[in-house]
Length: 331
Figure 1 (spheres, rainbow, N blue to C red):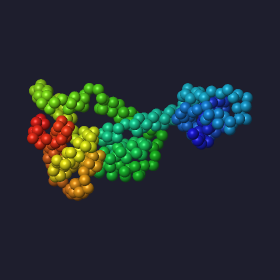
Figure 2: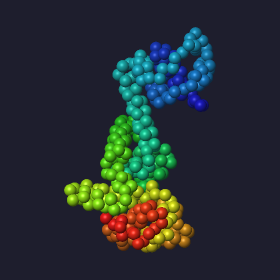
Figure 3: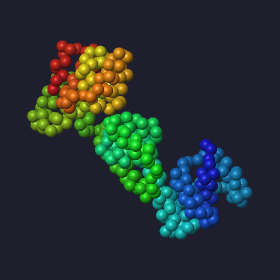
Figure 4: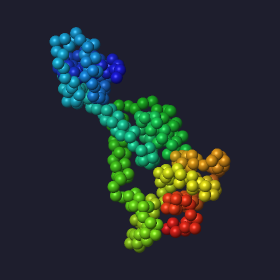
């Protein structure tokens, strides 16, 4: 790993003891101190080889004591700063650096999140908040998340990103709170244990007759719950998890007009799921359809999407599309 000058200095100061480090900081400008502290709180574990390389460059300074310890903890940094610039200023400087580090750690967890789930969490957020978060995310993750938004909001977000000039230090706390809220919401919304999603997965694994009978019994006692389960069962976004071979079979047996209506307003990733599984002629026709203004009602779109999901279930059950058995999948 190649270290720049500031990183070498930060590693060195965290190796010589807080008393000596604080004496060094007294000779630096506030800006230089802030730069060093920022690197200290974000520093990762370094190998002995890296540390020895830094120490070798400072051989004369460390000649009398080469049995050194690398101190990577917040208490050490706090002690060093208080001795160097005083209690109040030292704590303020450390607090700001720690907030910056915490935001970066929170962003790292967003980078590891599935793009479709992160997009779902950000969907209700203001475009300014979304754009700020996307700026700090990995570029590939930002691109994938952005593809899930509708075109109008995508354009708005891109414009705000182009106007972004950085975030003030005090705003990092607010950003961290927003990100942590999203992470906590994700744990509840996308929990893999229990909930409506788990019920839907179980029902989809049952025979269609048993599924329908169970739904009827649930409806008789709890219509609201039945409605939520059916909504999840026929969620069009579930298509992104379907094998390509099933989609190819569906496209082969589905009228182009029905698919055109079903894809109105869908996320780009869902459209691409179909685009990637059809021949060039159908792709060209569908692309032309989708560019035209649609007069299909929301109910018509939902009905065609529901039909597609029933056809997919049909294919999954029989291995091929069976039109004579399609009726049994209607709830």
